[in-house]
Length: 404
Image (cartoon, helix red, strand yellow):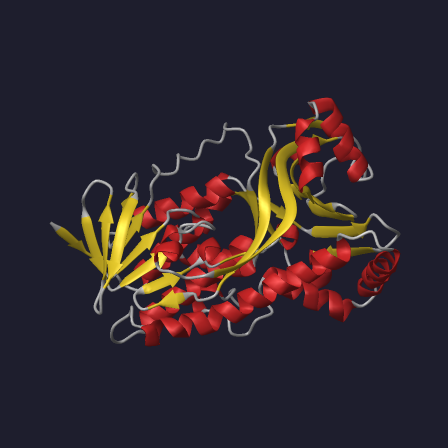
């Protein structure tokens, strides 16, 4: 028996589920394929998780319209009202305040699996979206009218459009023959939950170091999530330290701004690689999220860009009067997202080149730049508008923050 859909989404992570929910909201019948089981129900007694995202206004707007944001707020998320960024090579520092910008906060820090579960429940609430968990993709083929997908258990699904939301090592992208530009940064990111001597004061703290970037992101009950990008060899050394030595290294790297690191949970690590697919679309195929692009985490924009992909693709598909998987339709999505994502990738690489460097001229430049920017309110407002996701007047409708 062949199961027919309008859209098949491969990948049940945050961006895949957001894509399915958004396209389902447009009235299409959608299947979500994932090799894993459904995300576990939220448990308020479960320990805080180290993998977190910093959600901006555009992402919050999308999640609100998909009926996922109320769940996240009810379960567990932490707003932050300040951001302090400083450099290890001098006295340059910049401080962003929600009050100065006329905002209630600068965003929210949320555990990845909380966002994923909230979106999964939103998808489950739609009778035109089917979640097919523990259903690995075996192969797919594309003809002039549809994509034909075969699962490991022998089931066959068809749809005019197949969406690859299956991560940085996307099988859909590879099978479709889409090349990718890739840059290995020679770094690894270490993430963990920590407790520090002083309360984080609902502030995101970030320090640029010659060997990487260290961020402390606020979590409930005074805990913080660290994201520490380091040269690969140094990251391996940090991972090999015992708990006491690791806490001491963290305290030193943060100049003890919040006092000593008193406790650190299990450490996780992953390599940092920048990617941009040379094409986001082919006939019957579209890529979203990490399948299309990955960037350095120093600005925390990765998942926010993926959510914009989801919102834009849903807008294009919803507006399509005819064949929603045709190249003419899908190129509207590619034109809207590929250039913006590529610009953000290059911008993050430029930031990394300037700020993660111990050359004296660059140290002087970045310290002077931080100090000057801190004294220029219009520039600070522009920088925060970009971070908040409100600077682009052409945001897809689903991701436009509500007006005052």
